[in-house]
Length: 258
Image (cartoon, rainbow, N blue to C red; front, side, top):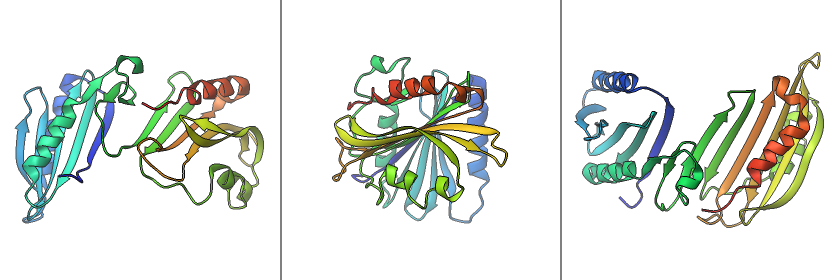
């Protein structure tokens, strides 16, 4: 199982009752699949802490296993694929991974972990990748983060893509005001960042402020992962451009290696 890959999905906050209902619904959905000898639910097993492990025989000696559990008030799902009848070894890895997932109220609670909001993954892994999204409850501000240990750099850099002739800003002749265009060091890696306020709509009645940061490293590694971070603001929040710049800097200037 040296090449095993585990996917972790962090769902919305939920109650114990709602969690139990969704697990039953998932079990029923897996059991209802009728593809002959393919995609058969062959195991539903409690994990002893309120969680549930499902095993699906996809075809022959290939399996997909998934474990569902409630951590504090977060519904979590972890999945792993296995082949050559290695399903038990795969599920052992899956349950070991599950034990490494902990609830945190502050990133400083568990230094050195891979933080996914109020959930963090302990341990060291050969490679890691994540796609995360955060939305402010107080205003129309969103963050999106893509992280990948070994993903190669794009052919064109961030600033080339944004300012090039093929960018959407150029194609739609958007009215933009550049707020940030720079290159600096992030967690020991070279990085580019860009920010602008853009007037949208035919009547120019809609405004959006967007920022982006992307690392650039010729040799991807655990110590030099691909990081692409975006922040978008719409609505009334776009009027305070200085405040948005300060918010952006408060996030990007704290990026560090584990």
